[in-house]
Image (cartoon, rainbow over all chains, first blue to last red):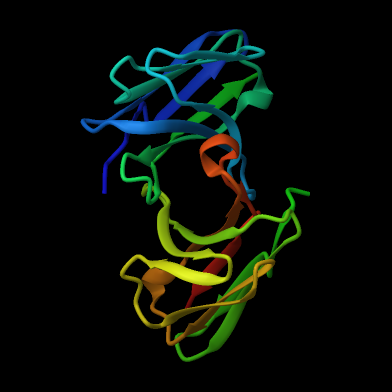
Length: 111
Length: 113
């Protein structure tokens, strides 16, 4: 099983600040997904990135897949309290047999 | 409503009890999954079903027994669990997961006492 490390584990910021969270591996993934999980709910898919170097934007969220397809980042501009949640990255192993999840970054945006 | 419904939402059971978790999806997805989510650990894949056939058992103890009677329903039967089995159990379904990812249910919060 290929491993994904997410950093930081916890992040607490004020409304309006920018932030970046990271997802890293020593292995290559064929694709990578980001999910957000709110308390008492299951994860919800935010984006899928497939091509090395790919950048996708979803309103104030910008996702990037590393050129070597071993890492990814999520940047949030002008964070809002509604962005609070657990952000999970998940990589599709090159064997295509399963999705491997990272431990997540717990983000808290204070009003 | 996420399209994947899990019941019950919360369950407290003794170590000698037998209980079942239920998952239902009417999204037309052909794959269904059970995941275990524990604090400070990545989601752990437990079982995978494709077209109601089990295609993966990730070395899960036999006290967890899955059942998939059709492509819309998935059960997880529990018996003689241990306190360390307390966790959030998530069901997910997918169709073309590389593009659309997983659709997760809200989970069952299980506490073993």
